[in-house]
Length: 72
Image 1 (spheres, rainbow, N blue to C red):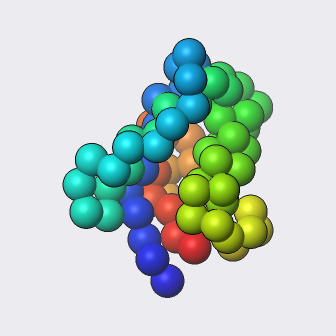
Image 2: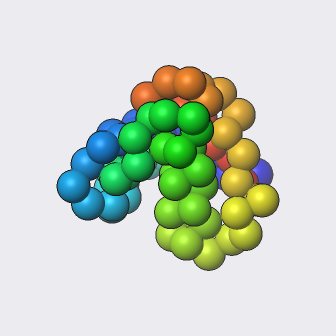
């Protein structure tokens, strides 16, 4: 199961994913970190990027932090 360290930048003007190092991503999201909106947007964007289902992506650590560990 691949694992990535993800640094989330919510409230950005655009949505994009940058690979900053092997196993590390910086993700820019339009969604604000309110009521889980940013986490939902993160899962949706990552599922498109990695071409997997949204239910396959799991935030294993950092659900309430800018730095998260995701697995899929």
